[in-house]
Length: 231
Ligand code: PL3
Ligand code: FE2
Ligand code: FE2
Image (cartoon, rainbow, N blue to C red; front, side, top):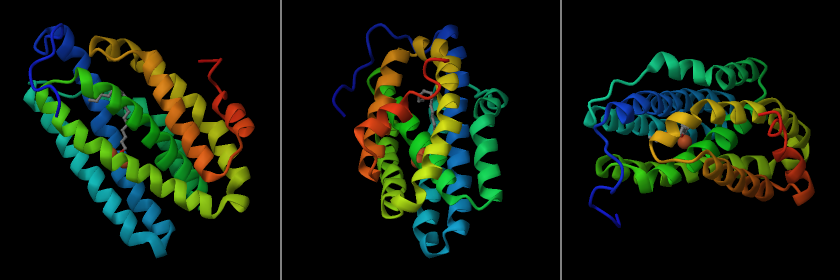
C-alpha cells in the first residue's frame, strides 16, 4: 500500500517484460492450481482436518484467479505448457506420495516447500510489481503464511514419528527447488527479481519452518544444503 505510483525503471509494456511475464505468470497460476488440488487431496488423507484443508484449497483457487487477472491486466497470455513442465517434478513426487498414503511427504512438498517458495517469490515481487499486481500479491502472501503454518503445526504435533520421513522428503524435493530457481532466474531478472534474494528468502522461511517443527540448527543446516551445491 506504500507506493502507488509506477516504479521508475520498469516498463511493464515492453515485449521483453511481457515475454518473461508470460512464463512467470503461468508458473504462479499453475502453482496455485496445483496447490488447490493438493489441499483437496490432503483433506482426503486427513479427514479430521478436511474442513480446514478445503478452506485452504479455496484460498488457492482465489489466488489463481487473482494472478490470472494480473496477466490479463498486462495483456499477457500465460504459457501454461511451460508452467506444467516447470512443476512436473514436484507434482509427480506429490502424487506418488499421495498414492502411498505418505501424508508427511505430501505436507513437506506442499505446505513447507511450495509455500516457502511462494512466500519468497511474492515478497520479492511486491516491490517491483505493477500497481494492480502488487495489490493482488500483497493479499495472497498473507494467506500463504497461514498455509505454511498449517504444515508446521501438523508436523510439529507429529514430530517424533514424522522426523525420518520429513528428512527423506526434504532430500528428495529440495534439489528440485534449486533446479526450478535456476530455470526461472533469467525471467525473474527481467521482472526485477534477483535469484540470490529468492534463494535467501526461501532459505530463511524454510529454515524457520523446520525450526518451528522441532529440528535443531544442526539438522537445518544439513537439510538446507541438499542439492544446493549441485544446482
Ligand atoms: C501456493 O500457494 C502457491 C504456489 C506458487 C509457487 C510460485 C513459485 C514462483 C516462482 C517464480 C517467482 C515469480 C513470482 C512473481 C509473481 C507474479
Ligand atoms: Fe496460494
Ligand atoms: Fe498456499
